[in-house]
Length: 107
Length: 140
Image 1 (cartoon, rainbow over the protein chains, first blue to last red):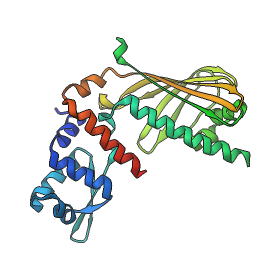
Image 2: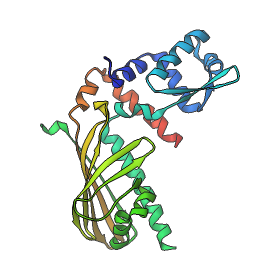
Image 3: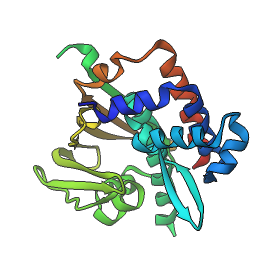
């Protein structure tokens, strides 16, 4: 059986899917129609790629009327990103919050 | 275990507040929640607690306490997918300076599956993902 990490790698191995995922990361939510407009491929092809991204947990969909909206799930990237770099950024951000808290403790 | 299996992260920052105050923020349950995560922290050697976020939780146990100077606890994350699993120890050390305190956090972890997870990756992958993460980081 494929592990979730394998599925993730496969989903992002395709440049069209990567482009769709990056576009969703930058634009937030988008409909299949809007994504098709910039993808240079047919709407059914875009839908198929979005299905693979969804299976890998990289996007979520939301139905509204006849439209399906897609949104990037950036957290799904976690296992692929270098652990040290990720934890470093995590702690830097926590230290930022700690400093904010310390300022408030003065008041 | 070889050296390459060990993951170590060190974050250091000089903070313009006295060590006693930072110690309070590091060891008081409701204050820890404000800067780190929801928790059931208590400053007792051997006390087990959890830090929880919307993505899951970390299992912790207080390993060492040197009041006002250093605090160590385990930081373990269990997960069905080995790529997410993590066993680590974190240590906070406080050192008074002229301007306040030098706060140092060191996390040492062991993830036997890390290399395996990267095993099938092509060389360009890492760079691509790092760039992608930079984009993602600007969105927060």
